[in-house]
Image (cartoon, rainbow, N blue to C red; front, side):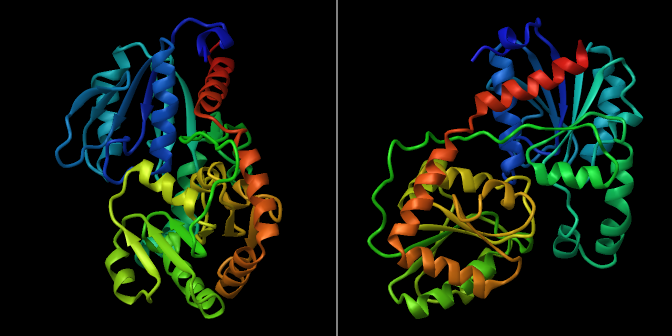
Length: 373
């Protein structure tokens, strides 16, 4: 991939604000997107500086895969530290572009970036219902009805990038009209053909064990599935504050995997029959595409992001949000109907070939170039 050639531009100096980087223990799909895109830009000659928060044991400055990473502040203080570092340091470093990556709370760069740089916002998903699951009352009410909308009004005139049509529609509903979609990439190579699966019918959940991801719904769905398919099993993959509580209440047949590598995760996704994806909303649902690339279809809630990554009855199945009985019913159908499962798996595998980090990096850079030139 030659990003510089495809956009016909000399190297750019990019300043990227994000609350976490790829080395942060709490890094997720958004941080993976940032890292995979930024390291490709760096490899093609662009100068990328990522400003982010500190975490225990981190270096304050280092270069990772060609990306200059500067860490200051913590989870909540990184935002005002970003402004201070810009005013005392970055303003004079001659950046062409500033990327303000929004994970619920923006960096508010339109209020302080004033050195002539082009500002772009990057947002994977809106928080919306997350406020009620992940923050206490009354912060949840304030966040849902007031904070998020007020924060995003600062970006009405700022070009925005997101990863799905669902999030683009959400942003449009708040008055943000200049929104481009850059599809997610893929960190595993799609298989050439469908793989052999586990001997036992196997469901898998992959995600952070927190309220908004609804891992308990996956376990409840398994309880129902196991009544009709006694030898079925459920693999739970991920870390989070709910994990120990979920372990304590899980029935026989549910296995939790601790701190596994990406390679181990991909192996489990390849061997499983069905990915179960409950959850409030996603930017895209990267694990769906990863599972698809390994020949595994998903049964997911019909919510923003997942309705983009899952094509209903083509690459997987969507069910109404919160309906655990329907989640389990469709999972049973896929586990029992081998012909249906194979058809969805083939379609899912074929669709996964449309996604790559090279394409994501190139498309994002093309958007930047239209704003800089």
